[in-house]
Length: 134
Figure 1 (tube, rainbow, N blue to C red):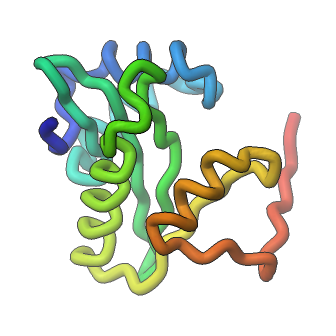
Figure 2 (figure 1 turned 30 degrees about the horizontal axis):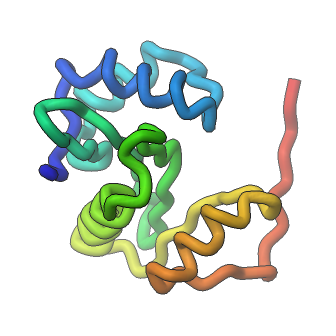
């Protein structure tokens, strides 16, 4: 397994991961494509057998980091790939000056919560996610 920065040539494979995992509304494909070209070190992919099988995106706002759109193809889950992606992207965010990294997970997603806990993340009840939707 290789964990590396995303490249433009990974774009269709990343979209495929999001479609197959159904974890995220893909949203604006142009924005994702732009993100990969603008800040490739904050979007990491996992490659196994010459195939992109996992992805996560990160942002930095001052000393605060965030990780989002993290997904691994179902056939490649439970192999340490997700852990590798999260460790790499977290380290990149810390190296860029972040002192805290946040992410959002549904309260009903027990598998994800257990995954993050096992990696040492703290589950916080201090924050309430507030949304405005159209």
